[in-house]
Image 1: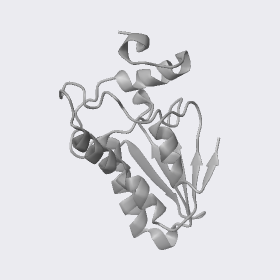
Image 2 (image 1 turned 90 degrees about the horizontal axis):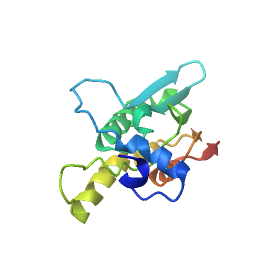
Image 3 (image 1 turned 30 degrees about the vertical axis):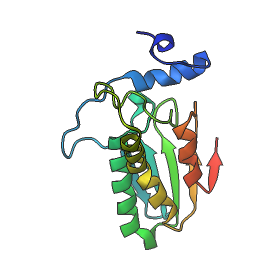
Length: 159
């Protein structure tokens, strides 16, 4: 299976980025590796939120949404000690957006169910905006669809 046959892609670059979405999602173990890492520099009072699913180019998924939500909840607890947040991604791309194959094998997904899943995934991004601190998105590589939407939670974008 190639990217050209697996999904419509307007260019070779878009197809390359989408290849990260084609990798099947392995089941997660409770307490297993997180897809979002949180680090807080207590001296500089800056938190770094890092999308950490480079094998799938940091595509949005329910698991990534859960981890993002948990990281922001942790930040909320430390709010007085955090004065700014840097949002970045690991691997060659910041985020390739939504993962069109995250529902693979589940048959046709109804629009309301897909909308609920998307809202759940993006809940942490909304919570990040409500922290009341400046958010800087440090982007790199390709940025497609939902990856661009992620940037709407940032006050500043640095590419």
